Image (cartoon, rainbow, N blue to C red):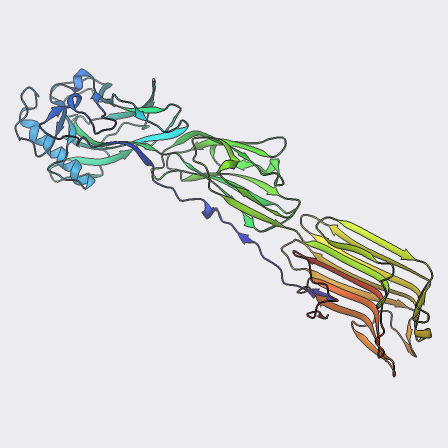
Length: 554
C-alpha cells in the first residue's frame, strides 16, 4: 500500500531579480553660472568652488566671435573687440533656447557660444578643462553629457567631438561627432536646434582624475554656429548582481547561479569590465556549465571550483548581460553571496546579498524481530535521522521470550538509508522471524516478514511511504492466514484479545509508515509485536510514532 505525503515546492527566482538600470552619478557639472556678470571670454570664466574649474581653447576658437559666455540678460550690443557685430542677438537666443530645453531661466541662463566669423580649421580644441576633476577610485566607467544648440543649419554644421582625459590618455566619449543640426531634440520657432547628448562609449578609467576636451571637426566658418551648456562628467559604472534560480533546492540537486551586469540608463558601451567571485565552501560548482552571453565574454573557474572570474563588454544600447554556472551542495545548509565574496572587480559596482538554501531529507529506519513490552526489542536495527547513507543489521538464533510468551528459531532485521541521484532518498526497514510460536501455539508461522519503505525522487517532492507483510504457514487459532493479508486485518482471540495482521500506520504528516507483521493485544495488558518496522523521510526529525497520538491507520 502507499501513503503519499504533501510535497514542498521550490520558489523560482526569476532573472527579474537583477536590478533595473539606474541613472549615472554626476561627478562634475558646469552650467557656466558662477558669478554671472558682463559677457566674457571662456578663458576668463572660473567655475564654482571647491573645484573652481577654468577652461582653455585653441586660439582660433577664442577670436572672431567664438568662445563667449552669453545670456539674454546681457546688452543686445556685442562687446567691443568680440568680432560679433549684429550676430550677438542670435547668440543670446541660443542661450535662451538651451535654458528652455533644460527647464531653466531663459533670460538669465549663460552658455558658451561660437558664431564663427572666419574659418577656424578642422580638429581644433574649442573647450578643454584645466583643473582635473577628482574620481573617487580607479576602475570606474565614466561618460559625458552636454546640452548643445546650433543655428544656420542650411550651412556648415558644428561637429563636436568630446573626449574624456585620463591623464595623458585622450579617449573619445562618442563614436560619432555631435551634429545638433542633424540630430536635434527640438527646433525652436526661431530655428535653433537644441538637444542633450550623452556619450555612447563610456571610458574605463584607471586614473584618479578626469578632464573634458571638445574638438570641433568642422573646418568651415560658413555656418558652424552653435552653443553648449551643462557639461557633465558622470560615473556610469554597471551594477553586478547575483541570483539563484530557485530556493530552496534539494541537497545534491543543481541550481543555476546567475551573475548579471546591468548597464546605467544612458546605456553607453562599457568595454573591459571584470570581476572575481569567491564561491563559499560547501557550494559545489560544475565548471563545465559556466557560460556567458556578454559581448567578448570570458568565464573561468579555478581548479578547486571555489573561484570564478568573468569579464566582457556591454554594447551600446544594451541593458544587461549574464554569466551563469550550475552549483549544488552535498549537504543541507544556506549559502550567502554578498559584496565581500567579490574579491576583485574592475568596472562594476559590488552586488548586494543573495542566498540559497539546500535541504536534505533525513533518513530514519528501524526494525525489531520481537517486542514484548516492557522488555527491550530483540534484534534491533536502527538508522536514525541521517542525511548520509547508512545501514544496520542484526540477527538472532533460537530464542525464547518469557516463560511462555513466544519463541522463534531465528530472526534477521535490516535498516538502511540510501541516496539516489541528486537529492533522491530511500529509507527502508525489514524484519523476518522464522519458526514462530506465540501463546502456547495459539499463533504460529513458519515465516513472517514485514517491510516499511519511504522514498522521494527529490528533497522537495512528495514522499511515498509503502509497506508489505508476507506470511508462510501462518495460523491464528483455527484460522489460516493468507500470505499477504490486507492492511490492518484483525482476528479475535476469544476471551483473550486481538491479533492485527499487516498492521500499518502513517505518521509524520504522511512521510513515514509503521508496518508490523502482527500485533497481539491481550486483555491482561500483554502487548507483543512480531516483525516490527518503520521508515520515514523528512526535512526535520519525524515524531516517534509510538509516542504520537496523530498516527493513523494506513
